[in-house]
Amino acid sequence: MDFAFGADDDAFRGEAREWLAAHRGDAVGRAWERELGSGGWIGIGWDDGGAYGGRRAALTQQVVWAEEYARSRAPARAGHIGENLLAPTLIAYGSEAQKQRYLPAIARGEEFWCQGYSEPGAGSDLAAVRTAAVRDGRTYRVTGQKIWTSLAQDADWCFVLARTEPARAGARRHHGLSFLLVPMDQPGRIDVRPIRQLTGTSEFNEVFFDGAVAEDVVGGEGNGWRVAMGLLALERGVSTLVQQIGFAEELREIVRVAVETADGGGGGGGGGGGSGEGAGDPVLRARLVRLWAELHTMRANALRTLGTSETDPGAPSVAKLLWGGWHRRLGELAVQVRGAAATVGPYDWDEERPYELDPLQRLFLFSRADTIYGGSDEIQRNIIAERVLGLPRESG
Ligand SMILES: Cc1cc2nc3c(=O)[nH]c(=O)nc-3n(C[C@H](O)[C@H](O)[C@H](O)COP(=O)(O)OP(=O)(O)OC[C@H]3O[C@@H](n4cnc5c(N)ncnc54)[C@H](O)[C@@H]3O)c2cc1C
Image 1 (spheres, rainbow, N blue to C red):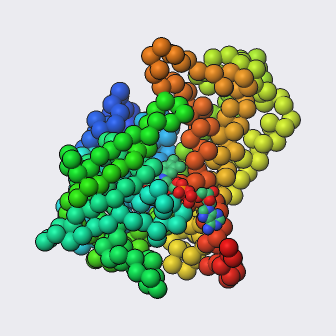
Image 2: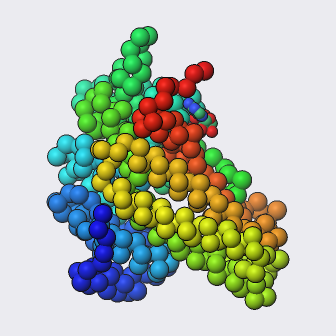
Image 3: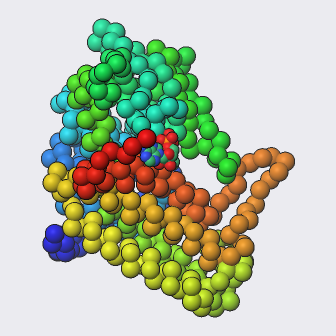
């Protein structure tokens, strides 16, 4: 694929840079999402013809925006699940009424979403979900438990994969599932219980549904598997080019710390002094160079496979497998360059407050999860083995 920035992209870059410089203040979370929404910066890549709040910006412009966003060090996005997972899924599978109801609120940065797929007995084996949805007039009543639901504590809505027909012996398990849209503000019917992590923070939750009302089903009752898999392909593939811009920024920061350490600066990265090995260490240098070369290879691969998910069913899995492992190794290097200093942080034993992690520590800890969520490495390898290489299903 031909990928080059043109004059329009340069003008777009100027607009993005100017807006970010003028609006990038202290706002985070909901306030920052609203700010982005009022500037028209949410959903710029939606393929909605501009009808529901998106801009239908060219791919080059989506890359420009991601570059400028990373460069401005704007906050991590709280509306990512609605903007990048649910919205494109609704554009592909939703009814006109659903698009009108949900997309503009996401584009304005007003409604946040979470993803209700995993259950205690259904992670990699997602078709084993047991949460049940029973029709109740024009709505559904949802009962069951989800787990690892990121950001559910702040979400207004959850898209839930649930069984609308009981699993029957002999029937294919993927049948009878539906993709439901559930409002989270249902006291007594939805209970969100944060899961406390090693760091003291709680991004994940258990979510218990007890007769919760679902207002909409996307793609029709019983078609949930198709819709859910369409969404996962987005999570695994299409956004990788944009994501790599963030990766490049992180790698640059690690290189900066390595150079600083070699110059005797002692670690840097916001975590105080330390005994990192620094850019003079030959093994560390080799790892940095290798990560850089692999990042460029992933970029070339992302460009090559843009828009090929129909013809190349393995492409999203290959991309996920590559970037998940790459980012984990980047996380390891992020602490290695800082040496012992990377392993400590302020902690108040009396108050038991969460650790204050600096960005490189956070990168290390969070990147451990990259080979698990969105389909683990083993699952990606199974997909490639069976759908691309034509290997028989694993025995046992
Ligand atoms: C940071 C993070 C955020 C998440 N956010 C969400 C969210 O918002 N919403 C949501 O629904 N879920 C979320 N998840 C859950 C995630 O989707 C699951 O963790 C993932 O699908 C794996 O499922 P599991 O944890 O049940 O592990 P299991 O499926 O029990 O797997 C355990 C191990 O066995 C391996 N394994 C399983 N089956 C096979 C097989 N057939 N062949 C070979 N190996 C196999 C796996 O690769 C893994 O190593 C999140 C997870 C993480 C880490």
